[in-house]
Image (cartoon, rainbow, N blue to C red; front, side, top):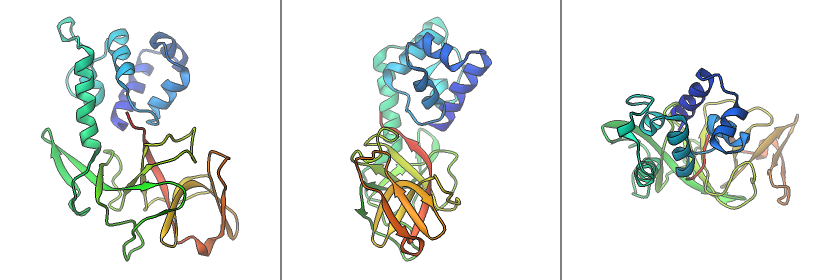
Length: 239
């Protein structure tokens, strides 16, 4: 959804509207506008309808970049059509079909899209790893954001409440093994044959893996006991 988020932000800036002003016009909290522009919140049906009706934006242009930005009066859509568009996008995000992760490109509506392995994660979850130390193989796949080009990228779907309110259950997280991990980053951390999703704080010889929800315990380990950490590149909330 990165392209849609950027188009939404660019439109607001071109109209010289602050996030607060746009939020008031759309009847949503300012934080929601901020989260949409940062790609941390998906475009939901009700929000898209408000954007369409109150700002005059074409939903097709906003989600795909195709066609005219503004709709003509005869192009006004109804809610069922919006739901249909989003159902198609859900199909692009993930598929339950078994496939080799290496076969990571498919076509949808004439567009080439890249798919990566999708794993479930919560707490300390047992996940398969390849000889190279990366997660895999995966039985499910997720459609990768356009700007995530790391060939070793992979995705996890978050379960449970250890990372709320920052990350809701069901959020699809994309990780970029090629990126450097810095203290304070959200990471996929490998602990032997298990893995966890936490915020990593790096001391001299210690790694602290901290949940957002402080009702859950943090993990403290010597650096040499953490077999791999991969930085979060993208979080795509479920619709």
